[in-house]
Image (cartoon, rainbow, N blue to C red; front, side, top):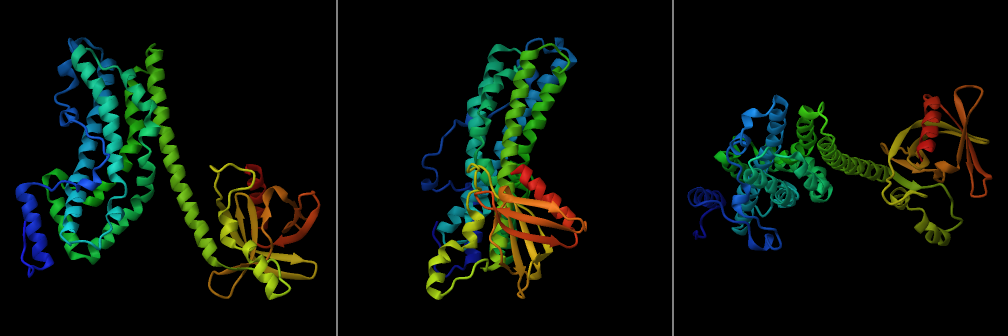
Length: 417
C-alpha cells in the first residue's frame, strides 16, 4: 500500500486504518513470532452445552448438574478469556507494530503498552490446548459427565505454566498509566485506540479495560474451582474432592507468589527512595583525603541497603518496617535523629536541612546483635550493640514520642528475623 511523500501522518494513519478495516488486520511481524507455539484454530471451539454431549443428563441429580455447570463455566470462561487476550494482540498490538513500520507511532514504547501480554496469551493457550481441550474431547467421545479429576494434571503444572503472569501483574499499573498519558499527549495515538475500541470484537471495552483481564482471570480461578467443589462437598467421593482441593491449592499458590513479587517491587521502590534521600555516610571520619579514598568503597549506602540479608537465603528480601523521629542521647551529646527499622537492621540518621534528606551518623546495626531495654522513666529505652564477640561496642538511649512503640517494633523485628 503506497502513499505520496506529501501525505501527512494524520491522513496516512486514516488510510492505513481504513485499509485494515476493509481488508483485515495485519499479521504480527514475522520476527516477533519466531519460536512461538502454534495451535490449530479448531482447538479453540466450544460449541453447544455440556448437556448436548451427555446421554441421559436429565437423570442426574441437582448436585451433579450443578457440578457439571460449574465445570462448564470454567471451560467456557477460559476460552472467552483467551479470545479477549487475542483481541489485544491481533487488533491493538499487531496493528501498532505495523503502523510503526510505516513510521507512525515510533515514539510509542510497545512494551510499555502491552508488557508481556503475548507470553500470557501463550500460557493460557498451553493450559487450554494441552489440558482443558483434551478433557472436552474425552467428554464428547464418551458421552459421560465431565470428570473434574481429568483437569488435575493441568492444574498440577499451573505454577510452571502461569509464570508470565508475575511480570504482567507487576507491570500492569505502569502500562495503564503509560496508555493514559500517551492518549492525553498524542492525538494520533488516541485516534488509533478509539478506532480499535470501536471494533465489535472489543465489545465496547477500552484498551485499559482489556489489559486488566489477565489480572482478573488469575484471581478468578480459585472461585471457579470452589464452585466446582461446592455441589459435591457433602458427598462421599473423597478422591474427587481431594483432586479439586489440590487444584485450588495450586492456583492459590500462584496468587500468593504473584502478590509476593508485587510486594517485593513496592519494597524495592521504597528502598530506592530511601537511598535517594541519604546524602552521605558520616558514621566514620577519615583522618585525611588518602584514607577517605581508600574507605569510600565501604561507605556506599546503596550497597548497604541492597545487599543480601545476612544469614538468609536469596529468596528473602529487605523490607522497611518503620521509620520516624526520635531523640538520641549519648554521654556528651543529644540530638534529633531519624531512624529506619528494616527486616535485618536499624539505621540511625540525622535530618538534613535539604527537605527530607538525611545523613547516616551511626554504623548500621544488625538486629541479631542489638539488645534493647525499657528504662525506668518509661519514656526512653537503652539500645546496646554487641560485636561478634558478644561484647558491647556501642550504647545509646533513645526517647521521644512513640518510643515505647519503637521498642516493641524492634523486638518484633528481631523475633521475625
